[in-house]
Length: 387
Image 1: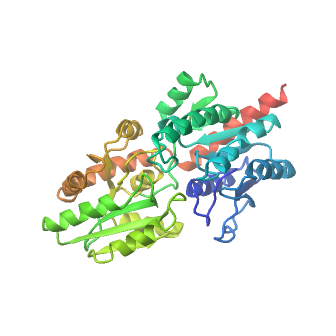
Image 2: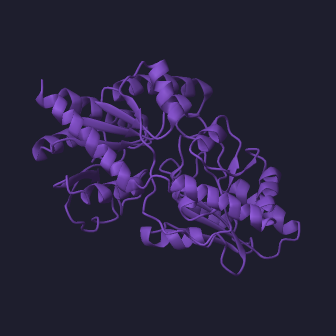
Image 3: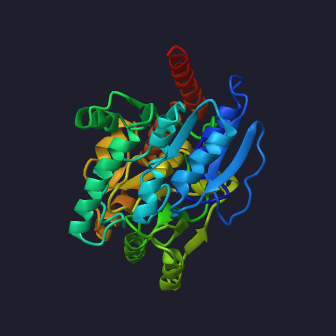
Protein backbone atom coordinates (compact mmCIF):
# COMPACT_ATOMS: atom_id res chain seq x y z
CA UNK A 1 0.00 0.00 0.00
CA UNK A 2 1.35 3.40 -1.01
CA UNK A 3 -0.40 5.93 1.20
CA UNK A 4 -0.02 8.72 3.69
CA UNK A 5 -0.29 7.09 7.11
CA UNK A 6 -0.86 8.10 10.76
CA UNK A 7 0.54 9.60 12.87
CA UNK A 8 1.35 11.70 9.82
CA UNK A 9 -1.52 14.03 8.96
CA UNK A 10 -1.27 14.28 5.20
CA UNK A 11 -4.32 13.75 3.03
CA UNK A 12 -5.97 10.30 3.11
CA UNK A 13 -3.86 9.05 6.02
CA UNK A 14 -6.96 7.95 7.96
CA UNK A 15 -8.40 6.11 4.96
CA UNK A 16 -5.05 4.40 4.39
CA UNK A 17 -4.84 3.34 8.04
CA UNK A 18 -8.27 1.72 8.09
CA UNK A 19 -7.83 -0.06 4.76
CA UNK A 20 -4.42 -1.41 5.82
CA UNK A 21 -5.86 -2.61 9.12
CA UNK A 22 -8.66 -4.52 7.39
CA UNK A 23 -6.35 -5.95 4.73
CA UNK A 24 -4.07 -7.27 7.46
CA UNK A 25 -7.06 -8.99 9.12
CA UNK A 26 -7.68 -11.17 6.06
CA UNK A 27 -6.42 -14.75 6.14
CA UNK A 28 -5.44 -14.53 2.47
CA UNK A 29 -2.97 -11.74 3.25
CA UNK A 30 0.37 -12.78 4.72
CA UNK A 31 1.67 -9.24 5.18
CA UNK A 32 0.88 -5.64 4.30
CA UNK A 33 3.84 -3.38 3.55
CA UNK A 34 2.99 0.30 3.88
CA UNK A 35 5.13 2.64 1.78
CA UNK A 36 4.23 5.74 3.75
CA UNK A 37 5.23 9.37 4.05
CA UNK A 38 8.15 10.54 6.18
CA UNK A 39 6.87 13.12 8.68
CA UNK A 40 7.89 14.73 11.97
CA UNK A 41 5.00 13.03 13.80
CA UNK A 42 6.97 9.92 14.79
CA UNK A 43 6.70 6.24 13.92
CA UNK A 44 3.31 4.57 13.32
CA UNK A 45 1.98 2.31 16.06
CA UNK A 46 2.86 -1.38 15.56
CA UNK A 47 0.16 -3.50 13.87
CA UNK A 48 0.02 -7.26 13.39
CA UNK A 49 1.08 -8.38 9.89
CA UNK A 50 1.95 -4.79 8.93
CA UNK A 51 5.45 -3.60 8.06
CA UNK A 52 5.92 0.15 7.60
CA UNK A 53 8.49 1.58 5.19
CA UNK A 54 8.59 5.40 5.23
CA UNK A 55 10.07 6.22 1.83
CA UNK A 56 8.64 9.49 0.50
CA UNK A 57 8.08 13.07 1.59
CA UNK A 58 5.44 15.63 0.77
CA UNK A 59 6.78 18.01 -1.91
CA UNK A 60 9.92 15.98 -2.56
CA UNK A 61 11.08 15.84 -6.18
CA UNK A 62 12.46 12.34 -5.57
CA UNK A 63 9.27 10.42 -4.75
CA UNK A 64 8.91 8.95 -8.24
CA UNK A 65 12.36 7.39 -7.71
CA UNK A 66 12.27 6.44 -4.01
CA UNK A 67 8.88 4.71 -3.97
CA UNK A 68 9.48 2.32 -6.93
CA UNK A 69 12.98 1.65 -5.61
CA UNK A 70 11.64 0.60 -2.19
CA UNK A 71 8.91 -1.48 -3.83
CA UNK A 72 11.52 -3.22 -5.99
CA UNK A 73 13.62 -3.91 -2.92
CA UNK A 74 10.77 -5.45 -0.91
CA UNK A 75 9.03 -7.20 -3.86
CA UNK A 76 5.35 -7.32 -2.85
CA UNK A 77 2.96 -9.44 -4.91
CA UNK A 78 0.87 -6.36 -5.78
CA UNK A 79 0.55 -2.71 -4.87
CA UNK A 80 -2.51 -0.64 -3.93
CA UNK A 81 -2.04 3.13 -4.17
CA UNK A 82 -4.33 5.33 -2.06
CA UNK A 83 -4.10 8.71 -3.80
CA UNK A 84 -5.67 12.00 -4.72
CA UNK A 85 -4.13 14.61 -6.99
CA UNK A 86 -2.29 16.44 -4.18
CA UNK A 87 -1.11 13.35 -2.30
CA UNK A 88 2.58 13.93 -3.07
CA UNK A 89 2.63 17.71 -2.76
CA UNK A 90 0.85 21.02 -2.93
CA UNK A 91 3.67 22.31 -5.17
CA UNK A 92 3.12 21.61 -8.83
CA UNK A 93 6.30 19.85 -9.93
CA UNK A 94 6.74 17.40 -7.01
CA UNK A 95 2.99 16.79 -6.83
CA UNK A 96 2.90 15.87 -10.52
CA UNK A 97 6.07 13.77 -10.46
CA UNK A 98 4.73 11.65 -7.61
CA UNK A 99 1.68 10.78 -9.68
CA UNK A 100 3.96 9.01 -12.18
CA UNK A 101 4.42 6.16 -9.67
CA UNK A 102 1.48 3.96 -10.81
CA UNK A 103 2.65 4.09 -14.43
CA UNK A 104 6.25 3.35 -13.41
CA UNK A 105 5.10 0.31 -11.44
CA UNK A 106 3.07 -0.89 -14.40
CA UNK A 107 6.20 -0.64 -16.58
CA UNK A 108 7.96 -2.88 -14.06
CA UNK A 109 5.04 -5.35 -14.35
CA UNK A 110 3.98 -4.87 -10.72
CA UNK A 111 0.20 -5.57 -10.47
CA UNK A 112 -1.19 -2.19 -9.51
CA UNK A 113 -4.57 -1.02 -8.16
CA UNK A 114 -5.04 2.73 -7.82
CA UNK A 115 -7.72 4.11 -5.50
CA UNK A 116 -8.30 7.61 -6.91
CA UNK A 117 -10.30 9.87 -4.60
CA UNK A 118 -10.77 12.85 -6.91
CA UNK A 119 -10.49 13.91 -10.54
CA UNK A 120 -8.61 16.95 -11.83
CA UNK A 121 -11.48 17.68 -14.22
CA UNK A 122 -13.83 18.24 -11.26
CA UNK A 123 -11.56 20.46 -9.15
CA UNK A 124 -11.73 24.26 -9.18
CA UNK A 125 -7.97 24.75 -9.30
CA UNK A 126 -8.05 28.39 -8.24
CA UNK A 127 -10.46 27.91 -5.34
CA UNK A 128 -8.63 24.81 -4.12
CA UNK A 129 -5.37 26.76 -3.88
CA UNK A 130 -3.51 25.18 -6.80
CA UNK A 131 -3.62 28.25 -9.10
CA UNK A 132 -3.46 32.00 -8.47
CA UNK A 133 -5.13 33.15 -11.70
CA UNK A 134 -7.70 31.98 -14.24
CA UNK A 135 -4.96 31.38 -16.84
CA UNK A 136 -2.95 29.26 -14.43
CA UNK A 137 -6.11 27.39 -13.46
CA UNK A 138 -6.75 26.48 -17.11
CA UNK A 139 -3.16 25.31 -17.50
CA UNK A 140 -3.46 23.26 -14.31
CA UNK A 141 -6.67 21.65 -15.56
CA UNK A 142 -4.91 20.72 -18.82
CA UNK A 143 -1.98 19.29 -16.85
CA UNK A 144 -4.46 17.42 -14.70
CA UNK A 145 -5.96 15.77 -17.76
CA UNK A 146 -2.48 14.67 -18.88
CA UNK A 147 -1.80 13.27 -15.41
CA UNK A 148 -5.16 11.50 -15.42
CA UNK A 149 -4.14 9.66 -18.59
CA UNK A 150 -0.87 8.69 -16.91
CA UNK A 151 -2.69 7.49 -13.78
CA UNK A 152 -4.94 5.37 -15.95
CA UNK A 153 -1.85 3.30 -16.81
CA UNK A 154 -2.46 1.41 -13.53
CA UNK A 155 -3.98 -2.04 -14.02
CA UNK A 156 -7.15 -0.97 -12.24
CA UNK A 157 -8.36 2.48 -11.21
CA UNK A 158 -10.96 2.32 -8.44
CA UNK A 159 -13.20 5.32 -7.75
CA UNK A 160 -15.70 5.76 -4.94
CA UNK A 161 -18.28 7.77 -6.93
CA UNK A 162 -20.31 6.19 -9.78
CA UNK A 163 -20.32 9.29 -11.98
CA UNK A 164 -16.51 9.50 -11.76
CA UNK A 165 -16.33 6.00 -13.22
CA UNK A 166 -18.76 6.99 -15.97
CA UNK A 167 -16.75 10.16 -16.67
CA UNK A 168 -13.45 8.32 -17.06
CA UNK A 169 -15.03 5.72 -19.30
CA UNK A 170 -16.72 8.29 -21.53
CA UNK A 171 -14.08 11.06 -21.59
CA UNK A 172 -10.91 8.93 -21.42
CA UNK A 173 -12.22 5.59 -22.75
CA UNK A 174 -10.89 4.01 -19.58
CA UNK A 175 -12.15 0.44 -19.50
CA UNK A 176 -10.03 -0.20 -16.40
CA UNK A 177 -12.01 2.33 -14.31
CA UNK A 178 -14.22 0.53 -11.80
CA UNK A 179 -16.39 1.45 -8.82
CA UNK A 180 -15.44 0.61 -5.25
CA UNK A 181 -17.56 2.10 -2.46
CA UNK A 182 -15.83 4.31 0.09
CA UNK A 183 -16.65 1.90 2.92
CA UNK A 184 -17.19 2.65 6.58
CA UNK A 185 -14.02 2.81 8.63
CA UNK A 186 -15.25 0.42 11.31
CA UNK A 187 -18.01 -2.07 11.93
CA UNK A 188 -19.86 0.65 13.82
CA UNK A 189 -22.39 -0.01 16.53
CA UNK A 190 -25.63 1.91 16.12
CA UNK A 191 -24.96 5.28 17.78
CA UNK A 192 -27.29 7.45 19.79
CA UNK A 193 -28.89 9.75 17.26
CA UNK A 194 -29.74 12.32 19.92
CA UNK A 195 -27.06 14.88 20.84
CA UNK A 196 -25.72 14.74 24.39
CA UNK A 197 -27.04 17.10 27.06
CA UNK A 198 -25.53 20.55 27.34
CA UNK A 199 -24.99 23.23 24.70
CA UNK A 200 -26.08 22.33 21.18
CA UNK A 201 -22.83 21.88 19.29
CA UNK A 202 -22.14 22.90 15.71
CA UNK A 203 -19.01 21.05 14.60
CA UNK A 204 -16.78 21.23 11.53
CA UNK A 205 -13.75 19.05 10.88
CA UNK A 206 -11.13 19.07 8.16
CA UNK A 207 -7.92 20.44 6.74
CA UNK A 208 -8.55 24.16 6.49
CA UNK A 209 -7.51 27.19 4.51
CA UNK A 210 -8.21 26.71 0.78
CA UNK A 211 -11.72 25.76 -0.35
CA UNK A 212 -12.50 24.76 3.25
CA UNK A 213 -12.56 27.88 5.42
CA UNK A 214 -13.99 28.55 8.85
CA UNK A 215 -14.76 32.25 8.42
CA UNK A 216 -18.20 31.88 6.87
CA UNK A 217 -19.20 29.35 9.51
CA UNK A 218 -18.11 31.69 12.29
CA UNK A 219 -20.17 34.47 10.65
CA UNK A 220 -23.20 32.16 10.52
CA UNK A 221 -22.66 31.15 14.16
CA UNK A 222 -22.54 34.79 15.21
CA UNK A 223 -25.72 35.42 13.22
CA UNK A 224 -27.44 32.67 15.22
CA UNK A 225 -26.23 34.28 18.45
CA UNK A 226 -27.77 37.57 17.30
CA UNK A 227 -31.03 35.76 16.63
CA UNK A 228 -31.18 34.74 20.29
CA UNK A 229 -29.72 31.23 20.26
CA UNK A 230 -28.04 31.26 23.65
CA UNK A 231 -27.19 27.57 24.10
CA UNK A 232 -24.77 27.04 21.23
CA UNK A 233 -21.16 25.93 20.99
CA UNK A 234 -18.98 25.97 17.87
CA UNK A 235 -16.16 23.42 17.51
CA UNK A 236 -13.73 23.94 14.62
CA UNK A 237 -11.57 20.81 14.63
CA UNK A 238 -8.67 19.88 12.41
CA UNK A 239 -5.47 21.33 11.04
CA UNK A 240 -4.17 23.50 8.23
CA UNK A 241 -4.33 22.41 4.62
CA UNK A 242 -0.81 21.83 3.24
CA UNK A 243 -1.49 24.88 1.02
CA UNK A 244 -2.37 27.15 3.99
CA UNK A 245 0.18 26.87 6.75
CA UNK A 246 -0.78 28.91 9.84
CA UNK A 247 -4.42 29.35 8.82
CA UNK A 248 -6.01 27.84 11.93
CA UNK A 249 -3.69 29.65 14.35
CA UNK A 250 -4.61 32.93 12.70
CA UNK A 251 -8.32 32.04 12.83
CA UNK A 252 -8.12 31.18 16.53
CA UNK A 253 -6.53 34.56 17.20
CA UNK A 254 -9.03 36.37 14.97
CA UNK A 255 -12.03 34.89 16.75
CA UNK A 256 -10.67 34.80 20.28
CA UNK A 257 -13.50 37.05 21.53
CA UNK A 258 -16.33 34.97 20.04
CA UNK A 259 -18.12 33.15 22.89
CA UNK A 260 -18.15 29.34 23.14
CA UNK A 261 -15.90 28.72 20.15
CA UNK A 262 -13.23 26.01 20.34
CA UNK A 263 -10.24 25.09 18.18
CA UNK A 264 -9.16 21.60 19.34
CA UNK A 265 -6.64 21.21 16.49
CA UNK A 266 -5.55 17.76 15.36
CA UNK A 267 -7.89 15.02 16.56
CA UNK A 268 -6.28 11.63 17.21
CA UNK A 269 -8.08 8.57 15.84
CA UNK A 270 -9.15 7.45 19.31
CA UNK A 271 -10.89 10.79 19.91
CA UNK A 272 -12.79 11.02 16.61
CA UNK A 273 -15.89 9.20 17.87
CA UNK A 274 -16.27 11.52 20.84
CA UNK A 275 -15.87 14.56 18.59
CA UNK A 276 -18.69 13.54 16.26
CA UNK A 277 -20.99 12.20 18.98
CA UNK A 278 -20.77 15.55 20.79
CA UNK A 279 -22.22 17.35 17.75
CA UNK A 280 -25.83 18.29 17.12
CA UNK A 281 -24.96 19.06 13.50
CA UNK A 282 -21.86 18.80 11.32
CA UNK A 283 -21.28 21.76 8.98
CA UNK A 284 -19.35 21.75 5.71
CA UNK A 285 -18.44 25.39 4.97
CA UNK A 286 -16.81 24.59 1.62
CA UNK A 287 -16.65 26.82 -1.44
CA UNK A 288 -15.86 23.99 -3.86
CA UNK A 289 -15.32 20.25 -3.74
CA UNK A 290 -12.60 17.83 -4.79
CA UNK A 291 -14.59 14.60 -4.61
CA UNK A 292 -16.30 12.39 -2.07
CA UNK A 293 -15.99 13.58 1.52
CA UNK A 294 -14.34 11.36 4.09
CA UNK A 295 -15.60 13.67 6.86
CA UNK A 296 -19.19 13.20 5.64
CA UNK A 297 -18.71 9.43 5.81
CA UNK A 298 -17.48 9.81 9.38
CA UNK A 299 -20.43 12.05 10.26
CA UNK A 300 -22.69 9.34 8.86
CA UNK A 301 -21.00 6.59 10.83
CA UNK A 302 -21.86 8.46 14.03
CA UNK A 303 -25.42 9.31 12.96
CA UNK A 304 -25.03 13.06 12.63
CA UNK A 305 -27.08 15.45 10.51
CA UNK A 306 -25.14 17.55 7.99
CA UNK A 307 -25.41 21.06 6.57
CA UNK A 308 -23.86 21.23 3.10
CA UNK A 309 -23.20 23.77 0.33
CA UNK A 310 -25.19 23.58 -2.89
CA UNK A 311 -22.13 23.45 -5.16
CA UNK A 312 -22.20 22.23 -8.75
CA UNK A 313 -22.78 18.50 -8.75
CA UNK A 314 -21.84 18.02 -5.08
CA UNK A 315 -25.46 17.46 -4.04
CA UNK A 316 -26.00 14.87 -6.78
CA UNK A 317 -22.75 13.09 -5.93
CA UNK A 318 -23.59 12.85 -2.22
CA UNK A 319 -27.16 11.78 -2.82
CA UNK A 320 -25.94 9.10 -5.23
CA UNK A 321 -24.05 7.70 -2.24
CA UNK A 322 -27.23 7.84 -0.16
CA UNK A 323 -26.45 10.86 2.04
CA UNK A 324 -28.88 13.67 2.81
CA UNK A 325 -28.46 17.11 4.34
CA UNK A 326 -29.84 20.60 4.58
CA UNK A 327 -28.29 22.76 1.88
CA UNK A 328 -27.16 26.39 1.83
CA UNK A 329 -25.87 28.78 -0.81
CA UNK A 330 -22.05 28.75 -0.83
CA UNK A 331 -20.45 31.98 0.33
CA UNK A 332 -23.65 33.20 2.08
CA UNK A 333 -23.39 33.12 5.91
CA UNK A 334 -27.08 34.03 6.30
CA UNK A 335 -28.08 31.05 4.16
CA UNK A 336 -25.76 28.85 6.24
CA UNK A 337 -27.30 30.23 9.46
CA UNK A 338 -30.78 29.43 8.12
CA UNK A 339 -29.72 25.86 7.30
CA UNK A 340 -28.18 25.37 10.74
CA UNK A 341 -31.31 26.76 12.40
CA UNK A 342 -33.48 24.36 10.39
CA UNK A 343 -31.56 21.40 11.80
CA UNK A 344 -31.22 22.76 15.34
CA UNK A 345 -34.90 23.67 15.65
CA UNK A 346 -36.32 20.33 14.49
CA UNK A 347 -35.08 17.38 16.57
CA UNK A 348 -37.19 14.89 14.59
CA UNK A 349 -35.76 16.03 11.24
CA UNK A 350 -32.26 16.09 12.72
CA UNK A 351 -32.61 12.49 13.88
CA UNK A 352 -34.06 11.43 10.52
CA UNK A 353 -31.08 12.94 8.68
CA UNK A 354 -28.69 11.27 11.10
CA UNK A 355 -30.30 7.88 10.56
CA UNK A 356 -30.23 8.29 6.78
CA UNK A 357 -26.55 9.26 6.82
CA UNK A 358 -25.73 6.37 9.15
CA UNK A 359 -27.34 3.94 6.70
CA UNK A 360 -25.42 5.49 3.79
CA UNK A 361 -22.06 5.44 5.58
CA UNK A 362 -22.30 1.95 7.05
CA UNK A 363 -23.90 0.08 4.16
CA UNK A 364 -20.59 -1.50 3.17
CA UNK A 365 -17.95 -1.95 5.91
CA UNK A 366 -14.26 -1.46 5.16
CA UNK A 367 -13.70 -5.18 5.81
CA UNK A 368 -15.68 -5.93 2.63
CA UNK A 369 -13.76 -3.27 0.69
CA UNK A 370 -10.52 -4.97 1.75
CA UNK A 371 -11.86 -8.30 0.47
CA UNK A 372 -12.84 -6.59 -2.80
CA UNK A 373 -9.24 -5.40 -3.28
CA UNK A 374 -7.78 -8.81 -2.53
CA UNK A 375 -10.17 -10.46 -5.01
CA UNK A 376 -9.18 -8.05 -7.78
CA UNK A 377 -5.50 -8.44 -6.95
CA UNK A 378 -5.97 -12.21 -7.22
CA UNK A 379 -7.40 -11.79 -10.73
CA UNK A 380 -4.49 -9.56 -11.74
CA UNK A 381 -1.99 -12.13 -10.46
CA UNK A 382 -3.79 -14.94 -12.31
CA UNK A 383 -3.79 -12.89 -15.50
CA UNK A 384 -0.09 -12.16 -15.11
CA UNK A 385 0.71 -15.83 -14.49
CA UNK A 386 -1.14 -16.90 -17.63
CA UNK A 387 0.87 -14.61 -19.96
